[in-house]
Image (cartoon, rainbow over the protein chains, first blue to last red):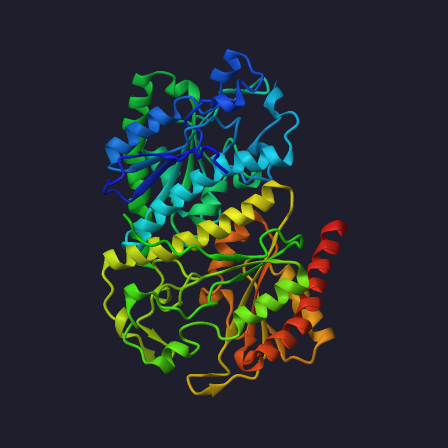
Length: 255
Length: 255
């Protein structure tokens, strides 16, 4: 099998900070093998294909927090690396109100091919990076960076910053608390989604089994729509995330 | 980094059965790079180095259940693939009453090297196999096969067959129930260890995050001390495991 393997992009690999930033929906690139999936250019630029602003924000955070950043190089419409291979959302036939013609009838062989080309390299790459740090006695903290659309199925969303947890709520709660104290963002825990919606796959696979502190951050994408806005949001959120990490370190020492 | 990567051995790869058998402690081989870890030959043959009988039993089960079998090719004293890289038991300085001189002072670089040579290839290989099956719409069932010593720290153990679960007890309970009905083995749930002893690492990493049914089986090694005994135990346990799987399939349909 000489299939292309789309390894994750790793930036700032030797960063000294404890946080490992992950961006599963960084890219809207559809590799040639999948054509345009039957989508218009506007659809391929829209939030269904990626999380607009998330990569720019994550880069701004990485720089300010001395954090390594791991991101996927392929659109989530080809394979959503934050979903297991048997989840409907892994290769969605429909995303929000948009049909995805190229995903309408995926054979088992095609599902396998995308899993091997995109899902496995992404998670193996992230796993290796995390285990290298674990082996060296560091205790990485996994923070995934996402953006969400301000209008979903026609309804506006008022939340601006969502902090989502998997089995261990400690870091998410600490980040939410810091955001409420330090920013004027409309901040909420487990919004606009929660683990019950199966959106915490990366945390479940990469962090929870190792007892690594973790959280998923969701920023409304109209707040990070330009490079300047991404930078401003990074400047605002880097200290918030750092306070969250400090808080759980304090709790760990006290227990 | 031109380090040797010790990929897992995969037998019966195209097996049609739903069960994936895993044997993390199949081998007592210490690769040349690690010499003899300062152990006597008797120690290198003892249960501290591997799970005697587990591989023979697993092969007997694989044949009878049409199951794929994944096993580690290196002694658990070099790296225990059922432990995360930051657990003391991953590269133990002491195992039961035996000091392991070669593990007395492991540097961070050595811990990293063993993680990259043994732990990552094992888990990446198992992960790929499981995800391939998940992508093809199969729902693999993960069953790990272990053996335990009849005398531990000088105390005899009366349990003969232990069935251990991680977060989801369904399959373990069903296998325990079938063993009680079908065999005369002294059978117990979560004995001689339980998930609280951090012995379910493979289940936690490979099965629990995907919602795959799973269980860890522990057979007292004096009951599988010869090839004939391994075969007899496989003949006894294959139907027990199959009944357990059938039971959870029935429960899944009913719910």
